[in-house]
Each structure stands twice: as structure tokens, then as C-alpha cells.
Image (cartoon, rainbow over all chains, first blue to last red; front, side):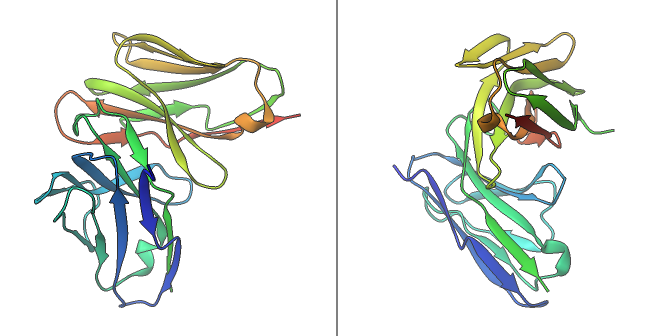
Length: 115
Length: 109
């Protein structure tokens, strides 16, 4: 199993551009998450999904959108990129729910810079 | 005040030392997680616990639900243990993990 994969690994965007961060998991997990990690700060939840077709906002959803058309894929869309979105983005999945009982498996991260 | 507080923020040790990292939280939880973030950035789950103690190799995690406190211990530390260790809690109600800011551990040879 590949686990959780993310693409791209690195990206530089200009202000106002848009992009999609891809996330795929092959563990048949129902629950998937997008986090951002700013330097010296803890992980913050952007959006999460409890299954195909169901998504919900986390702590810091502004400026982002998600979709979950399949169990495997959970892309994160940035519209009108801003310098404040410069961060490292992690996708994760788990198998036992969003209450935290399930171990979370993380992707390798995408380092995004907005200039 | 953050809902999850870790201490210390930074820790430097000599190889072989016994290390303790602490995590305190202020909300009701269903489980507490300890994660390790490698220098290259990857994050792996070390432990998930809701009571008592778990051990994996040289790592031991304990939790005291009444005191809302958990500790991560590393015995016979090694330079390869150098990483950021992150505590996170899953609430009894609600639907997300809340993360501490992490403890940067450096183990010198």
C-alpha cells in the first residue's frame, strides 16, 4: 500500500492564481483531513470529510474549497492565492471517525509559497 | 490559552539520556495522540491512547485522564530520535483533532 499520497511536493504561486492540491489514500478510510502547518505553529484543520460526498469546515477554511467524489480522493482547491496561504499542507486519513479515536495516517506534505 | 499545551518547547539531550515530554489539555477527550515529525517534514503516528500506558520499543506514553495530562518518555535516547513530537487530542464531542505546537527534540551524540 502506498498509504496517503500528495501532489505536488512543492509549488510556487503568484498572488491571485489558483491551484488544486491532490490527495489520495489506498487504505479505504472513510475519514480524510486537510491541515496546514505554519512555521513554529501547530497543525490547523482546514476541511475534513467523513465519507464520499460529505465534507465540513475545520478551524481555518477561508480561501479553500474541497470535494470528495470518491473514497480515495480528497482534493483541496485554493482560489485567489494570497501570501497568507504560504504554508505546508498535509492530507491525512483515518478509519475510526473524526472524534479522534482512529490513528491518522499522513501524507508527505505539499510546501506552498505564494509570492 | 491553547487547549493543548506541550512542554518543553525545545529540548536538547545527550545520547543515552531519559527524555520526558509533557502534554496538558483543557477539554474533554476521547483519545490522545502522540505524533512524530521527522526533520524532512513527514508525520507519523506513535501512539493513540485513552487510558493508562502504552509502550513501543524505547517509547512509552502515559495518560492521566483525571489530571488531563499525558507524557511521552524516550529511554536510552539516540540521535535518530531527533524530531518534533506533537501531542493532539480528539474531543469527546466535536469532530476534529486539536494539536499542540510540538516539542523540538535534539539528541546529541
